[in-house]
Image (cartoon, rainbow, N blue to C red; front, side, top):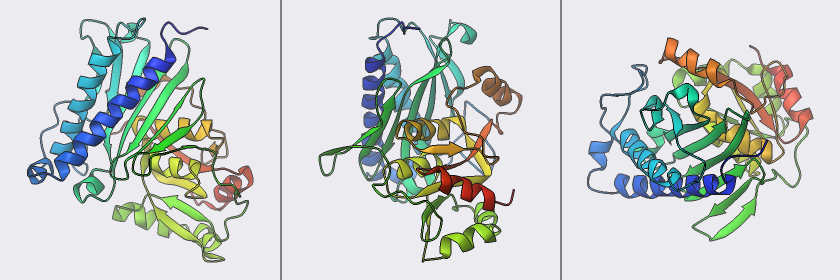
Length: 315
């Protein structure tokens, strides 16, 4: 089925939006008001866990993203409305007089993925992915590495690509030139920032022992970043089994990884698809905004490596 809009325009404007947010966040966190942006604020949108408070920088970044999207999507012929699903805002349709169920385009936003790293200028990403539920497929995804100043993206009819603005270099994402087939000596991405997640990883003794053979390494990562690093060849695999990530966190990584040729499975060995059940995702969130639908995964360039990891995980 042919889109009612120009996919390339959607991708272009999403890239511009992420870049605007990246530049704004970098400047703000290096500026005189950086301490104010680290303060906890009231979340007027979704209800978040007390363990995951909204910070001033989260709200500021989301304002930048939403303002840009509302302005830019108006320019695209065929897009009269869109629904946003984000960690800070929840589910909101623009313009607000259009029923959410009548809107085809769903834009998943995580304006700041990795707030604790942003606060210390150590990292943080801005994420946007666009899904068309009428044709039941991804339109595009864009992920911006804020302090490394890199932009990653993919579209339904395109490839997975990236640009490094520091070195002014473009590159295609296709994993490593020599993908590993075995965990021994591998570089594996885990999320271990919170003690509970670190403890969960520490319990996976068989998996850790297999990585440690030949001096393997655990990489600290989070969200879509975990998968995109594998797609870019900076890690051999990414694993999330403790809690899973919400759709707005992980969808850009899943899609960019898929377009880069990665093998991505759930913890039972079933290949993960980027075809979404939007109604189920929304209904889960509406029932309990503190616990959105989450996705656990194993991602690697080589299927043998991915399946080895799954076989060693203790669920």
